[in-house]
Length: 361
Image (cartoon, rainbow, N blue to C red):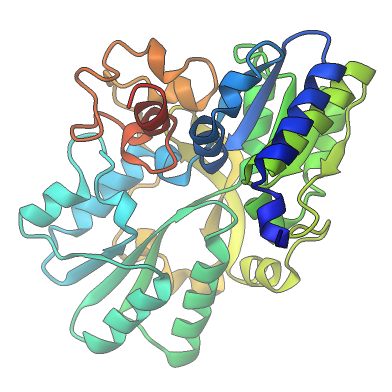
């Protein structure tokens, strides 16, 4: 058995399931933050195996899902400018703003290019000096460092036709928002291992202490998830509340220093709008003044604040852990994988797409 195989081994998983049932005296409400974890829970059937002792609550950790409709509208507005090439990750082009998607904007003649990295967008800028190339930067602490690197490279090359429409988000403030409300009833948290691999997990200790809630940093394989649940339940049964790191093979307490340094150099913390939440204080990353020439909001005088528009989609309640996809009247009817109404159905990490693939698919 290889090292990776251990974390996918069904016999190991079954033993941990038995251990979970041996320590749990009741059903506990545990939120997995990351959409990748949600898909893994449902794909492996772990959610069904643990129903008697764990109520899984799906958190807001899908970066595509929580990108606000307003910033998508800003991206779409740029495509109406013939001098602009908008570069975006592929999963963003089907996510609706308040009126349409980037895919629809491209069909109407907008220059929308799908890229795998902001470094690809830099190449577009170098190869198209007569165009303004804008990278649509979305995601959490995992994707922000490479965007910071792209801006640093652009600055070093004096590449003036490149900018970033930044909608980068920070996870801890959203957790505080959720835990400050009793609606979701969260009793334990599984933190996303890839976010903590970049940022470390020091920022989670004050949250755990303030809300008296266990937080376990967890990976994405079946054994990772089960060990995270087990450690969380052990704490809950003992009345403890601390941060534990299950994902030690990837995550260290201080995170990735080089990535953090790049973030600090290029970005400053600011309020940011989240789909389904509205504006959350100190939850986003804004480009610092020395690099403001690479801020698409400034370059194109785009509005940073706007009001949420009413929608038939209940993805906001799903992202806050208040409802599940099965509680949406449109789920599987008016809203499907082929014809999604909202971001949580579009995204490969969205809770609604997970339910379509693994619950009723």
